[in-house]
Length: 246
Length: 394
Image (cartoon, rainbow over all chains, first blue to last red; front, top):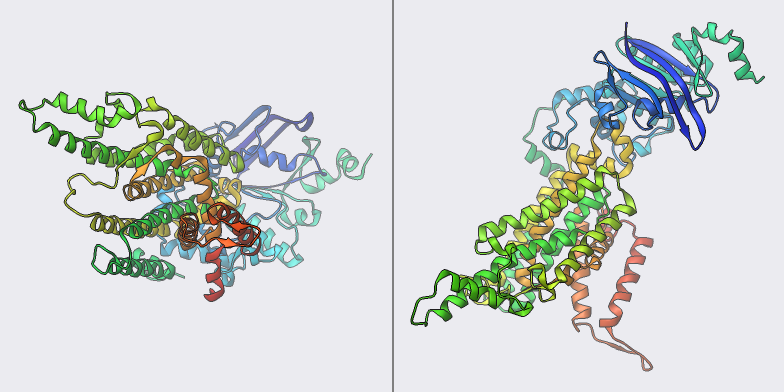
């Protein structure tokens, strides 16, 4: 296990509100990590910072064995470096088919001219079919993504994330709007992905996190409150105070 | 899922039957106009009508380009007519220079002493620029003697302008209405600049006499008009094919995704700005080619042609025709521009209401405005969207 992502001393202020306050988190590869915390703890902002959507006021975000800083990179460069993200609200391209959505996410060269002269290969097609199978959308490949149910859109976005073949997956509330059986399937996919990659999951559902069975980081008011196994952090008095109110 | 590989071209046309339909209709239309034209002999269509139809094809081509940049990629550019005009100016400079050169040489040939090169150039400059009070050829006209070089300028000047403008605008992530305003400012600035006499393009006089093609003086306009009509039809066909290929497949998928949610596309690892730049520049170049074919048929180009309103009309055509579908843009441009010349050219009979006479030259704009509102409210997919009702996709 080597450190893949190192966030250290990061702070962000939005209009005077300190969303992230001297946050430091390290993620190894491979690793499965759950990030929990009450509303406004800075979970999503943490992902925004790593993926380049939000620039921190101070601190460092270091990536990979070459210790590259992610702060000077654009969103698309960060994504190409190997960081994939699933949003809280499923954001798929609704006007396009499931196949097109997956094909766009598939790991390939991303330049305009590479894409223009890209030729569909049977290998790419097979990979899409394989992914569609995994997310249970094999029969829906020609359907428009907008026609899918909320849960299916979640699946599709997870499929797109896997198609990107990233080294680090940032997954924001993957199980929202899913049935218990679907949640179980999601845990399986995430656990399997975490065998070879780093996976960071934001979730509110404690049962879901228990099933992941991984190290948990508790955020509160923009910084780390506790870290460790789920049992360890749930016995932490500070965490109990934060969750139940002082 | 792994089907055997088929040649991409065959697959592209097989997957996009509307492209074949369009090309077939275009070929039939071209054939029909040719047979009915004055140049061919039947003379049912006058030469000026053939010119109007040829010009309409050029407008259809820029509308297709506009549909790609706006309807597919979501960049509401309100400045693409600037590129159209620049294409016209580039080819117009050669047309005017070469024709004036011919006239000057033949008029000086009677002189007892053969004229020197300098004298010929002076005479040409005086001929062209006398109207703006100058007798010197501006540096801008350095390539005007060469058709090849000026044809290169048709592509290079608008292409470079689009590249630099697009790079600056997209890199700063200017989007939406702000980008539209910026493109309006670009075409307005260019138009105002060209209105000045000392710009080197004859100010508000513009370039004229472009319908006379140097070296082809022996051919009547009825024949030349057909040649340009064919060239315009060919350009529209090729342009349509190029853009249809571009927006199909994965590239099309990415640019439509940029239109719908560009932030998400970035998180997939695509550099949104470079895609926009490619689309913006390519459509600008195609617009310029359309302009280079349009103005020899129109005969005159002046800075008023690239006034901001022209580019707004372009967006109206595409909206009425139905954006996001290439044939919709063609239908919109053809229907609206032909209707416009019919109504404003005195073709439509005035309606006498007793107390008030509806004069279509004045009321056409009102009609167009109402039409635009009606299409936006009742047919958001435009006229082209009506095809969806006939041909339901399985």
